[in-house]
Picture 1: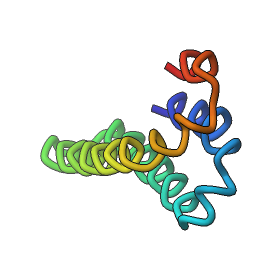
Picture 2: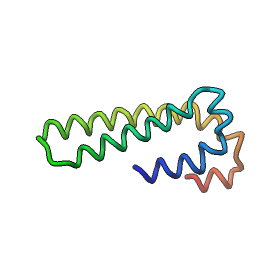
Picture 3: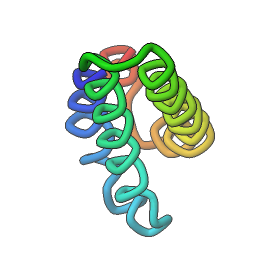
Length: 91
């Protein structure tokens, strides 16, 4: 997941920073990246299964929210801002 955050922040957020800042979303997306990365990292530590499961479920919830926001906001901003070729590179 860290790779997702790095690619997203460098190839997608930077070019859209002005638009995202106007909408107050840059901090939210970066916070989501940090939050689920920490949850996933903590879940890998030795701990009771229930605690690990709880952390994994929190990470899934955070990722679902993050991806939903991306779909709703980032896609709408990216399509007119980038060439079709650039969008294909992003996947």
